Length: 139
Length: 139
Ligand SMILES: Nc1ncnc2c1ncn2[C@@H]1O[C@H](COP(=O)(O)OP(=O)(O)O)[C@@H](O)[C@H]1O
Ligand SMILES: [Mg+2]
Image 1 (cartoon, chains in turn blue, cyan):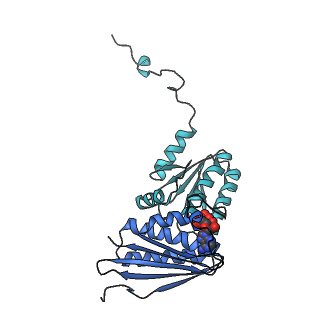
Image 2 (cartoon, rainbow over the protein chains, first blue to last red; image 1 turned 180 degrees about the horizontal axis):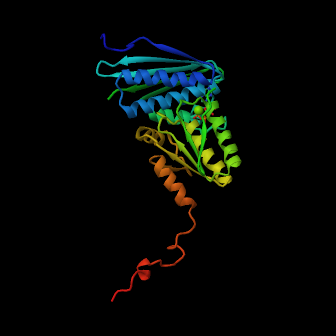
Image 3 (spheres, rainbow over the protein chains, first blue to last red; image 1 turned 120 degrees about the horizontal axis):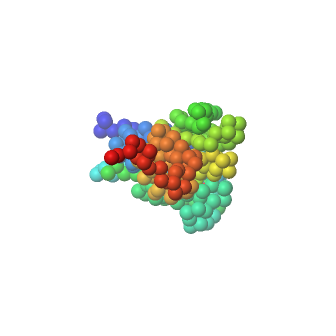
């Protein structure tokens, strides 16, 4: 267990400005390398994290990302929780549709991030903020 | 905020993105490039993304915008140096990068721009430049 980098200890990044999105990307990359994800899987996870961190900032009005190395017993993975106390998402199906945006984006952040990770869970409702949990497992 | 330098090399503008850009930096680059195209009268832009370990929907949109804006300003854009893991991730994210020309590296990018700019070749004009005919007469 001594070689497990950061296993079980969550690392938190506060997301309050543009440069914090960069910080989330860098932390997720470092942890993904340590957890021995393949290069393609690292790239997918960092890209998904970038999308979700930006949403936390732009739509959630800021919040945080918590990065944890997890172990299923069989393999290691990385879990990231993005949380904000913003307006929440009233129509989740719509928000998860490719191309849907209320902010003049490409509308690929949520739907694309979901495709790029192994597990994707959203807890949100109008007026209740948004909490998105994603996991990527090492193969 | 970092600013990405735009270099003029001959008739070309070269942008080599070396930092993990925050969103404002990407937007500033888009504006800087448009101004430099007009100021220099350059007809070709090469954007080297060799150093980028991810391209998310924001940067993808910036690349598309740069390509469209430069086209309107009579310049052609080529994006070079995309890493394989980035290409794989882009496709899964759902980004098509429509209308963006790509090349393997800066050298190929320069070739592509030169071809795009070249007046029609003699072949296209239907003229058969058979140089042998002007060579020494054979007996
Ligand atoms: N954390 C969030 N809080 C509130 N709304 C959100 C949040 N994340 C996403 N959304 C909503 O979902 C839509 C789609 O998001 P996304 O797929 O990332 O596309 P884009 O960022 O290009 O708009 C957003 O336009 C926004 O309306
Ligand atoms: Mg988004």
